[in-house]
Length: 161
Image (tube, rainbow, N blue to C red; front, top):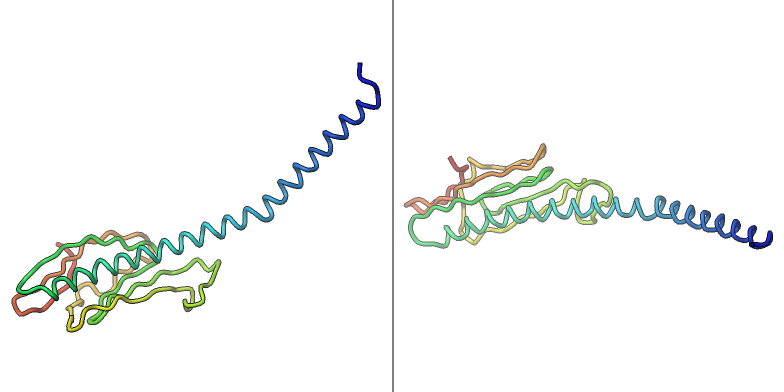
């Protein structure tokens, strides 16, 4: 049979255990959970920007390949432009940008929009009037783009039929 002294000690140990668990839960909810949320949003931002850059690189590679080749040619590529980003075609570069969440403002981005451009090879002057900028501000976009070099040596970028 347990004496009265040991009964009180067991109760005290249970209360101390409950208090330690309560402090641990408060720490997790106050410190760790917000850090995880910030890290998750930052990961989504980096992924969005990387996917936009990849689409720009694919388009630039197709234009450069046809520009460097002799004669006529045609290349169809599939591009994925993620939500809140855009990929644009100009006569000397392929531009890309993505809107950041605003939780962490990167130092080299202005106004919460990060981006860059992929230079085309020297002498490339593609006709991008049909495509312009592929804007995915409202949702993800999958698009097929045709890059075609005609007999005159002009590279034309257009949407696939």
